[in-house]
Each structure stands twice: as C-alpha cells, then as structure tokens.
Image (cartoon, rainbow, N blue to C red; front, side):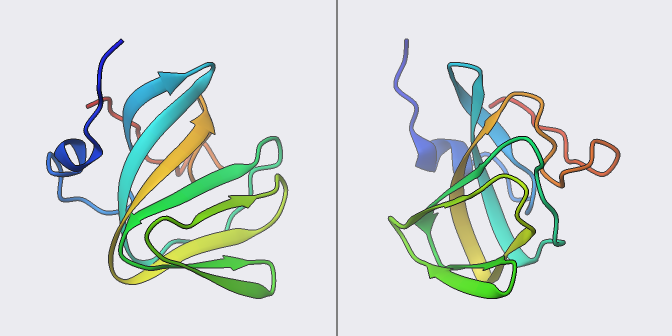
Length: 116
C-alpha cells in the first residue's frame, strides 16, 4: 500500500497517447496519460473504457455524438462502441482498464504500458 501522487507521475513523461500504469486495482491497470491531437477511432469488444479528466479538456467522440469533458469529468464508453478521444491542447487523464487491454483495441497497434 502506498500513496500515488498523480501530478508527480504525470511529470515523469512528456509523450502523448502513451499510458503509464501507476497502480493496480483488482485485475485492472490504473493509468495516467497525456492527450493532444486526435486518437484513432477504435472499440473494445470485451470491456468498457473509463476516462477521468484531471487537467485540460477532452472531446470524446462516441459513435455519432461528441462529449466535452473538463477537469473532474468522468465518462465510461460501453464495450463495443466506436470512440476516439481528442484534445486541442494537452489534457491529462486517468484511465482504468483490465490488464492486457490494448488501448487501440488491437494488440498489434497498441502502446506499451510502462509502470511508473
């Protein structure tokens, strides 16, 4: 057991769309990531996708709707729904996903998830 300071963890990397594991929660990875620009549309057929905006603003395109999320806003994309996050300026986000879930929905194109 230990305290995890999210700001400290986010300060350890400058890359975008590159999730870093900061804690384990049951069989899930708790991750921090920085968004800027557009991520490709994708889906996760077997799991929901959890987003909590810590700083900045995220536009989350889900199917044909766009949701605007600001600091403190949480959104869960149901499994199987095509979606993409995007951010005009850098946003900092907390993600929770089952261990082994590829962030792109495809293991061949997924980012590695280093542990901080």
